Picture 1 (cartoon, one colour):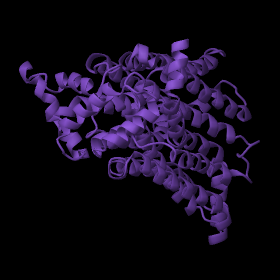
Picture 2 (tube, one colour):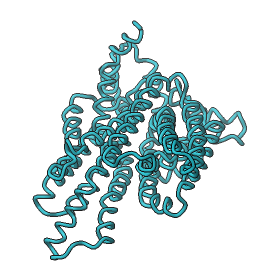
Picture 3 (cartoon, helix red, strand yellow):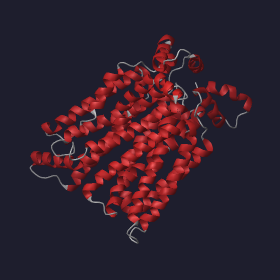
Picture 4 (tube, one colour):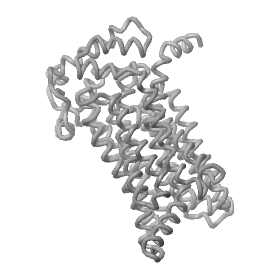
Length: 493
């Protein structure tokens, strides 16, 4: 206990940095995902009223649905644009300045939301949603990049996992402030949609007091003294020789080359398995069925006889469950490791959703089965929080060395946001066509990702960036002669 308290006090500034990064980073993702459900009817009513004023006729049903669908989906397009820029802005201007700029984008979006009703313009909502998406796409990638580069290897998994904790916290916050008793009313919905401006201002002001990423200063900028000062300030530790040696080895391997491009990441054999490990189980987390369960949950609640006005409160329970389980994951990730948590997590999710398919198929046989379905939804959310959700944030920070990391996050963000866009647009149609059997798609993905994670991806807990790169080189060059392996790390640059 004394040791834990001592470490908490020693790394208190690093933990405070994780809080600041989370507030303006992954928290924004969570709150944007959850708040739109509360604002849906008010935004659609506003669109109809505005249409009446302009054209002296109500908007037809198909046009209204098209506009609403675009309000929802343009967020993913903006997030993809932000993810693309996460490969260049943090490299050119640094992680800290990229986030400061990103907060300005969120504040502009919030102002558009506040004044959209006064201006009688639903187009301002569309633009604001795109800017919010950009803010989330850039902020989420740079948040994890920045935090992973500031953390010691023994704390890297826990600290980067806080990204998932803040996503879950954002979801719960969005659900709570979206209640009709708070900001979910017809008079307050613009302020609900503008609420993301508050954490953006908090991060902008707070981040001014923190240093730039030590690894960025040392490896990319070559500023050894500034890097040492940043490390000492964050870690409150005098003996930094091991971390300095690790950064020096990585910097010497770079030999003055520039950061790699997305095309380099996609083509290079030396990061092939790192890219697969990031793309399949991590960036592809959108295809495990978690977000689809959030969408389908209201139908299952309705079948269980839950009153319409009570469903929103039950959905808060789902969000709170995810938040609690991800927090528990943060306590065990450095002991259990990334490989087992994600691998067995996906496996259990696949099995549980298989049972859910069966119980959904026989829901009319017995009156108690719908309540079993609700329990299964909560079970899947628990498993997701304890494994795939948290590890999907922690693992990518481990996989790539400094020169490759920004472009790797572009690839990860592209897969993540395009996947979210496809799920949001196509899932309702798939449900309408095949009903509960739509979950077979997610079961197949979970089983495949579990097998890939358990059988092919090396464990990364407690290893330095160089050690992880060497472990993956055994896969990237498994057909090469073993005596060539010491030089394989050099080929990564």
